[in-house]
Amino acid sequence: MTKSYTLPLSRWHKVAERLSRHYAELTQGILKTLTNTEIGGYLGESQITRLKNSAEQELLKLHTAFALQDAIILIRQAIGDANTKNGVSNSLAEYDALTRRQKLLESILSGQSNEMISFDELPQQIITDNPFSLRSSLRVRMFDASTEAELQKQAEELRAKVYALADQISDLNGNQVTLELPESVAQAAGL
Image 1 (tube, rainbow, N blue to C red):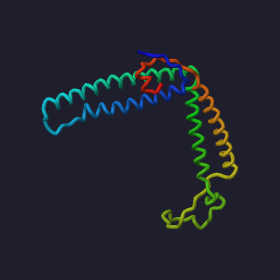
Image 2 (cartoon, rainbow, N blue to C red; image 1 turned 180 degrees about the vertical axis):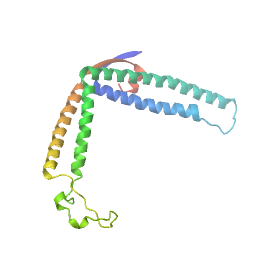
Image 3 (cartoon, rainbow, N blue to C red; image 1 turned 45 degrees about the vertical axis):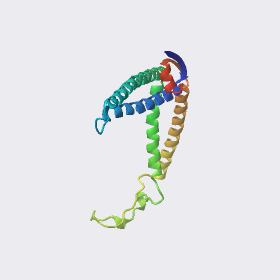
Image 4 (tube, rainbow, N blue to C red; image 1 turned 135 degrees about the vertical axis):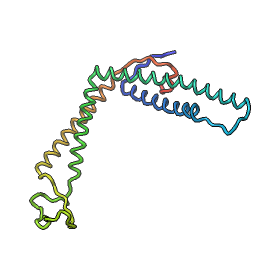
């Protein structure tokens, strides 16, 4: 028996996560029983009956696992369709790229320290004809203060864009989607 559920996309994401976790737990037990059952010796017909019953129970769970998987597919397809319709897919791609760019700039900026020396501060005594010299090395600041300020400005602008885009995606994930799910699957998802 199925029932209709209308939820925001963000909630459908959570439902799919729950069903995926339940599927993983269920299939671990199925695999353990159906592929790793061992006995130390023959104990009679009651042992065979117990083993057969155990196999039958796990095979029934296999059908449940497949029903969970079908529901996950249905939910992910509905999320994908809604994301495409609402432009979320494009926004997610942009969000990912901007986030990576922001992290790179922040890594460059956080890698700068007061211990670094600028090009014009390079002491002449470390210049040597012997590249294998045992003299200590110096960390060099590879750009000047104005470039650092420009990178900082870019990082702050990217942060603002990432925040705005995340809010936009969150708002779009508030759109409602209605799906029909078997009651047993809905129960496994906590609906």
